[in-house]
Image 1 (cartoon, rainbow, N blue to C red):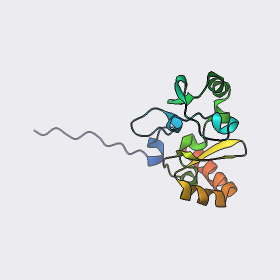
Image 2 (image 1 turned 30 degrees about the horizontal axis):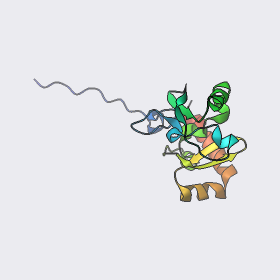
Image 3 (image 1 turned 180 degrees about the horizontal axis):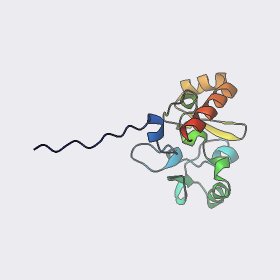
Length: 142
């Protein structure tokens, strides 16, 4: 007698993704860059294993204890929007890798994009893409 196959559970693709993008073989957000440094230094800065914080199932690294503490005091202020997934893709309700090297701060929030050409598309209508991505993110995270 053959064993029956396990029941297949179908989960919408959007719901299958973790809330913070870390990549397939890592638990580290922002490819190890310091989320606070984007705001204070205006550039991506690699974080250190000496200064980390867990947030929403991901490890964030920081270049200093001061930055780690600022993040812990207000993680929503510093964490990348849409969990660090590509903001342009999220405008269409899709999850795609966000790259810590292709970033923009708009209205006090950090947005990541997949690459430089996608970032140029994003910058062509940033307010429109933000509005669409915000809506898609809310729908995904109901």
